[in-house]
Length: 480
Ligand code: CTP
Image (cartoon, rainbow, N blue to C red; front, side):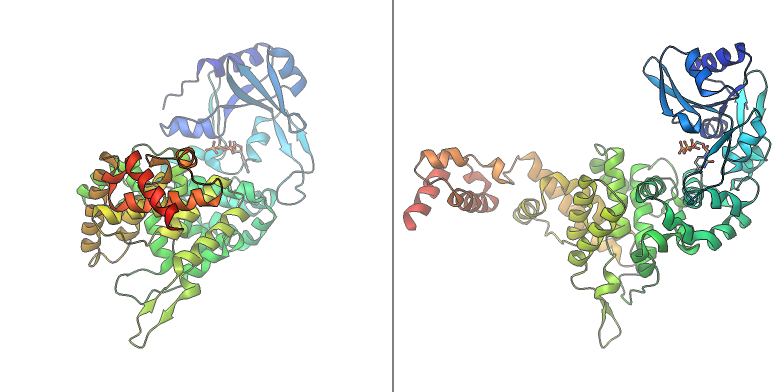
C-alpha cells in the first residue's frame, strides 16, 4: 500500500516536524486512502500545542481551541490540526468534561472509536497501526479500540457510527462491539438529534443501507425512531407483499440507492433481479438529482409505509388492508423528521412524496396532466423513483404488471413535458394582471377564475391562448 499525502498536508506536517514536533495524518483520511477511497477531508494530529500551531501558519481559525483543534487554512482549504490528547471523563455520553494534552501518539490513538479510524501516517515514520486497524480493514470489520463499552461510554453516538461505517464500508461489526451496542443502545438518548440525523443520513445513502437492520436488532432505532421498530414487527397479510412492512421499506431504500449506483452492487447485490430496462428508465429521473435530494428519496422509502401498522385492517379472508396509510404516514413522517432536526425542505419534500407514493396514475395524457397539477411538477421525477422502488420491493410474482403500467405512465409524462403542456397556474397564457385589466375585481375572485382556467387547459391544453382564456373569464364573471 502506498500512501501519498496531498501537498498541503505534507507542508503542514513538515513545518511542525521542522520545529521539533511530531505530526501525522490521522483517522478517516488514513482509513480511506488505504481502502483506495478519496478522503472527504484530511485531519492532522500533532504533539505541538494549539498556541504553537497558530504561530506556525499565516491563517488559522480557532475551531475548537479548548479541545486542542486549530484549523489551518491553505489557500481556500481548511485542515484540522489537533494536539495529541486524552479525553477526560465524559459527562453525558457526549462531551468530555475536560481534555488533557499528551505527548504520546499512542495515547491519542487509543482514545479513538474504531481500530480502522485509529491509524496515523507520515512520510518519516510511515504507518502507525497500534491496534490492528490494517488487519480489520482486510477482514472487513468494525471493532472498537480496546474495550467497546468504555468507548461507547465516552460517546454514545459511536454506536450509531459503527452501523454507519459498516454501511459505508460494507463491513461487519465485530461480535463484542455489537454486543456492547446491544447492552448500551439506550444511552443514545443522551445524544443530540442533529448528530443522530447526520449518521442516519450517511447510512441511508451508503452502499449498504440495509445495515440499518443492525441498528434495529441492537435497539438503536428504538431510541430515535420507535415508529420504525413497529413496522419491523408488522406483517402485511397481503398477496402483493412477501416481506414485513419494515423489511419492505428497508429493501425499497436499498433499491433507491441502487438506482443511483447502477454500476455496483448495493446491499451485497441483492437487487440484481432489477431488470436492466428498469435501470435505464429510472436513469432519466436520477440524472439531475443531487446528494441532498437522494437522501430525501431514501428517507421517503424508509418512511413511506410508516403508518401501515396504525391503519391495518384484516378482512374476513385474512387479507390485510391499509386504507389511508399515505395520509397518516405523511403526518408521521413529518413528525419524525422534525424531531430528528431535518431541514424544512427535506421535511416538506418527504411529506409530499409519502402522501402521494400510492397515487395510481392512468397512463393517458389527461390523467397525467391532472396528476402533475395535483402533486406538483417539481417532485414528479422523484415520485416516479419512489413508485419504482416501492414496486420492486414487493412480491416479485406480482410486480411485473405494475412495472408495465408505471413504464407507460412515465412515457406519457415525458410526452406531456416535451409538449410543454400547461400544468399549473404559472403556465397559463393569462395572469392576474390580465384579468384585472379585463375587468375582474382584485381579490379572491382572481384565484378562483385562474383555477377554473387551469381546469379547462388541463383537459384541453390547446385552449391555453390568451384571447380564448380571457373570453372564458369574461363569461365566468358575467354569469355571477
Ligand atoms: N472520532 C472518534 N469518536 C467520535 C468521532 C470521531 O474517535 N465520536 C475520531 C476517529 O478517529 C475519526 C476521527 O475522530 O476517524 C475523525 O472523525 P470524523 O471526521 O467524524 O470521522 P471520519 O473517520 O473522518 O469519517 P467521516 O469523515 O466519513 O465522517
